[in-house]
Every structure is written in structure tokens, then in C-alpha cells.
Image (cartoon, rainbow, N blue to C red):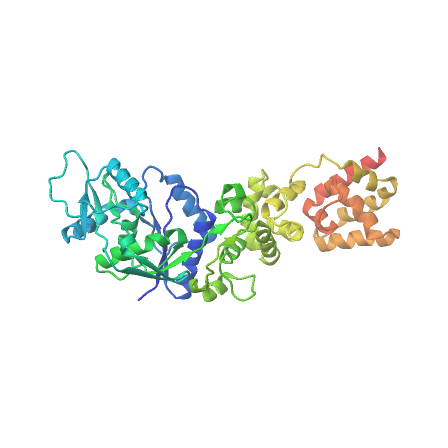
Length: 466
């Protein structure tokens, strides 16, 4: 049998960090076992599901590279199939109509609580024989077994036992003529051939109900793996107050997909002491059986560390388009400044994210108008004029505009004048950036381009003369 996993988000908002991890684990589990990973959009909540949220999910999965191998399945297009299965359960006596009003159900729960019992539906409509009340649209309830146990051999949580006597007859069809979650997912997972269900452990209590539905339909349940939640740094459930929870916000903050995937997979899974994984390694090594039962804490500093690692090690050409995307977000025209690859080479030791890179890159895209007064006072002194003039002349005469050639020019002028590198590079750095802080002086000058470099040195000489 072909292994098939699925990611099944509800389109009521963006793709959050927990959902992205679930998608990643499902994707990797399928890849390791030469199986298939598919996407289902659970959009039966018609009041909260929106096309914008659907697109946000697609955008997040596309950015992470976790795209489905088949067209996405939308639950709203399968209502007739759900209706067919619900009617079959009714016909076989495995489900029944329930006419209890909201007031009746509330009273039922209150009485159970007063007796110290777990609030649950008491099954009073199971064997109803009197005519149905007029004008009432009934729900359909599944006739859950009265006795026995449901044993869930969860691949993360281990063996979990549920007593059927504790499970009431869940509603599978609402009075507004729509299916419920627990019912529709069973029909979907069966029809889609899903063999392994990987999802958050908030669904663990749904699992015995769904297993009973599978058995009532004569189907073999899939395996289940319940992933622990992700916590914020303070130990509380990860939420907006901890910062970005929308996966696409991490892209906007300048994190690259490789770092995001590597970080997400380590939220609950490990392979020895290894910290850095390529996608091909993960596809071979990951198993949901190795996921830790304990909740994980989201550490933004660890993610930033990982991100800088990938900025340093990935091929600049592979990140060029992403860098250009960030430059445009920062209001810069990538066609009117240094190449994206050159910016990465110059700045990747100094930044942790591409958002930071784009911010630092502004000095090479915009006219230099602001100078740090302390930097000017320290470096643009009369004695700096001669090295600046000689560097300017040599740069104007360079046959090849490259960082290596510029480095030779700067060092050569320093040697000719008997000056240390700092005495030449310091004034040049202020001339080119207006500050004392920049990448290596050869890259600082190279990124400006010959014409702009000469103009900025001229402006610095004018400041000295003034």
C-alpha cells in the first residue's frame, strides 16, 4: 500500500507556525517512505473561511516548498458525498435523527454537572418512536458503542485508551444541512486513501470518535500521530503576543526558507546532536515515530542564528531573487544598484536576516546626504586629504572594477604613503557611507560603483577643505 499523508488546514486565517510544522512533518514522513503528500482545505466553516485565507495558506506552503503532489481537495465541493455516507449510516441503524433543542441540551448538561457527572448527550433520541415535532430540523447523531474501549496506538503519544461509555453520540450532520468536522474528515481520509494522519495533539480526543466511525463504515483506520504544541519563550502557548506566528511574516522579516524548515523540524524532532540539515537529509532521516512527546519552545534567537548560517553557506545566486524581493519591500530598485549576489557576499557576516541586509544596502542605492558628525571629526581631517586623492585617482584609472583590484589600490596607497590600512580605510569608509561602520573597505567601494565612489570621495575632500 502506498503511504499517503495529508495536511488539512482550515482557511480561517494565515498559515501559522504550528500548521507549517505539521505540513512539514507530513511531507517528510511521506518522502522517507516513498509515499505521497496531499493537501485538503477544510472549509466547511462557511462563516469564517475566506478566499484570502485559502490564498495565504497556498502562499505559505509555496514559500516553504511544501506543495501538494495533487490538486488540493476542498471540503465544500464534497457535501453530496458526505450526505451519501450519512444517509447510509441512518439506513443501517448506525446513526439517528435527534430533535433535542438547544435548551434541552443545556438542561441535560446542567443536570449531569449537578450529579457530578461528565456533561454529555444522554442518547434520549436513540430509540425515539413518537412523531418528530413540526418545524424542527433535526441533527444526525452517530450511534457510538455503549461499551468497550477504543485503543489509540498513537505514534507520538503511545498507547492511549478511551472508554466508549465516556464518548457520547456525536453529531455528524448539523441542522443547517452541513457535515461536522469529525464526520467529514473520516470520509475524506478514507476516500483520499490517507494511511497516516499527522496533526496537533489538540485532536487526540477526536481520534477515538473517528476510529469508531471508521469501524462503523467497515473501514480500516489510518495510523495517528499527535504532535505536541509549540510554546512561546515564556512557556505559554505560542501566540501573537510572542511576535510573528504567521509563516509569511517570517519571510517578510528576512528569514530564508531553508532556515525556517530546518528550525521547524527541530521543534520536537532530533537526530543525535546534529543541528543543520539539508532537505535531502531530512527526507531520509525524519520519522514521526521519533517526535518528542514534550512541547517545544520557539526561540527566535536560535532561528536568527540558523538564518545567518544559511546566508553564509548558500550560493548567493540561489538567494538573489529573494534578496531583490526584500530590496523592493524596502523601497529600493534592484536594477539601480549593486547586484543582489554582491550585496550578500559583502554583508552576510554582519546581518542575520535579509530584511537587515536590505536596510544596510540603502547606502548604495540612495544619495549620501547624512554624515555622522563624530565620524567626520575623527576621520575627515586635513591629513586624510592626500590618501583620499591618491585612492580617487587610482580608482578612476582602474581597468577592472572588482573588489580584489580595489583592495590592491587601497593597500598600495597606504604602503606608498607609509600609512597603516586604517589611516586610509577610515576616511574612505566615512566618505562612502557617512559612518565608521561598513563591510570591508574593498566591498564598500565596489558596491558603490566607480562613478558614485568618485563623487563621494570628492564630497569628502570638499568637507576637508571646508
